[in-house]
Amino acid sequence: MKWSEFEGELARRRDAGRPAQFWWRDDDAAAVLPSVKKLLALSKANRIPLSLAVIPAGAEPGLFELLHEGVTVLQHGTDHRNRAAAGEKKTEYPAAEPLAAALARISLGRDRLQALAGESFLPVLAPPWNRVRQDLLPRLPAIGMRGVSAYGARASAEPAPALRQVNTHVDIVAWRQGKRFIGESEALSLAMKGLSTAQTTGWLTHHAVHDAAAWDFLERLLTIGDIHWVSAREAFSYTAPAHG
Image (cartoon, rainbow, N blue to C red):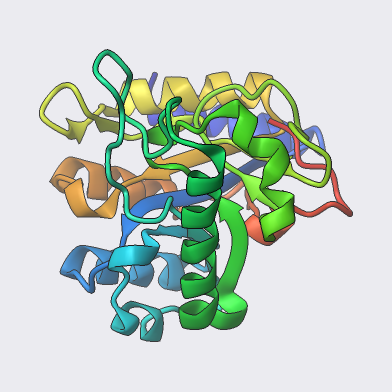
């Protein structure tokens, strides 16, 4: 798919009174890196709300001094350590771990981010590798979590009472191909698929591993008109619909 086709579809949606609705999540934030500074500058310059998924255990206090008013901090696990058993896909929350231990770790991370980020923090869990045990979900509201965000189509908008799920649909990094940019055509095609299946299409970025092509693509995407970018607070609001 080409930019002209993509922008044409965005214009058609605008003219029909149903503009494309996107949200933006960036994962693995912790250190004050040049790449995170670039990410935040792009968000601010284009006035695009950014949901920054921060790893609580490794978060540097200086990171939060860089945030602008358009940034919402989400919780990216607690320490981003792979605890998977042999044969299990990477996860911070393995099937064999007692639920109480996983919940205690999430709660600890929540408390640290709340202290560091203050009002910028939204208690939404964006689990590392986009994987979380389903039996954890009903227990998250009891420790103060309001939402969960993974990748791909979700099974339900509310996987547990008082817990909203809003996923991402377009990861611009090709992880199994040297962590390169997935390519313009592939990214735009995934976005078109998201537009056809979800009211709110989520873009997923990873500032620390972006190559030049990924940055170029992101810079162009953020300057396109005919898009309604929503913040995490809007996407996870219980007073407004958030589909997809």
